[in-house]
Image 1 (spheres, rainbow, N blue to C red):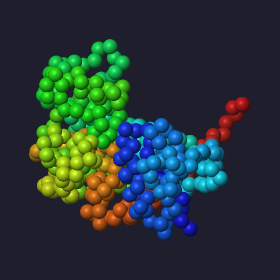
Image 2 (cartoon, rainbow, N blue to C red):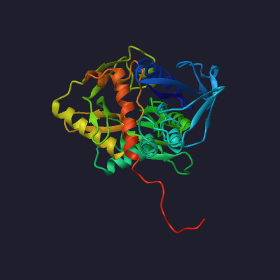
Image 3 (cartoon, rainbow, N blue to C red):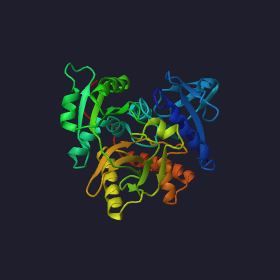
Image 4 (cartoon, rainbow, N blue to C red):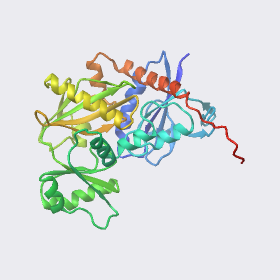
Length: 357
C-alpha cells in the first residue's frame, strides 16, 4: 500500500518561485509505486490550497484546512478529506525553512522530511549559525552583525577596518542570494545596506573571500554521509553567485561534479560539512556551502536545510554522481524521515506525579 506524501511548496518567501520549481521535480520523480504524492501549495499571502500537481497558479486550487487533532490530523479541501503519512516541505526561506512550518507539523505529530524546529531555526539565521560553527572550531569568515533597530549601527569605516575591502553584506535569514551584495566603495555602502535590511531586521557584513565556491551534499543521520564536493564556476562577469546566476541566466555558471580538488582537500571539505550538519542539529539532509581559497584555506559559508531540487540544483547532482538517481534520492529521504520518527517514539510525553490540577 502506497503512503500519502504531502509535498508542501510555494510559501510567503521571496524564494517562492524556486520552491515551485523544486517541488515540481519532486512531484514528477517520486516513486508512484511506493508513494501517493499530494501537492499543497502556499500562496505568497500565506493561503494553503490543494493543487492538481505542482502549479505556479496555486490560488486556482481548493482551499485547505487542517483539523487540529494530533492523534490523526486530517486535511480538508472542499468535500475531500485526507491524511498524511509523511510531509515533505519544499519551502525555501521565510516560514518554510526557519522552523515555522516544522513547528506546526511537529505539533500535529506529522513526520516531516528534513530538519526539525531547532536545526531549521539555527541554520536559517546566518549570524547564529556562524557563531555556533565558530564555537565548535569550524573555520568561518570574519563577520560583523547589525540590527535594524540598533541606534548605533556599524558604519562603513568601522566595517572596512575590520574586514577590509571589498566586503559582503547579507540579510541574515534569507537564501538564494536575495539581499546579498558586494560592497567595493563607500558610495555603495548605504544603498546596499538598505537593500539587505529591506528583507530582514538583521544583517551581517562578511569578509570577502576570493576563492572557489564549493558545495557538499549531506545525507543520513548518525552517521551522516557526505558526497564529493561540487564546484560552481562563475562566468560572464558576475561578482558572486547571485540570484540571476543561480536561476535565471543559463550561461552564468558551469558546474563541476565532482570538483577538481586534491583528495586531501575533498576529504577536509567532507569532514567540515558533516561537522556543520551535526553542530547545527540538522536531520536527514542538507547542503553545505564553502569557500576554498588555497592550501589550508577552507571556510564554511552556510548550510541549507532545504536545498534546491530544480534542474540546475547541486544537491541532486552531487548524489547522482555517487550513483543515486533523483527517484531513489527522494525515496531515501522519505525513508530516513520514517526511520527517525519511529526511533523517536521511545521518548516519553507523560510524567507521573502527585501534582493536582
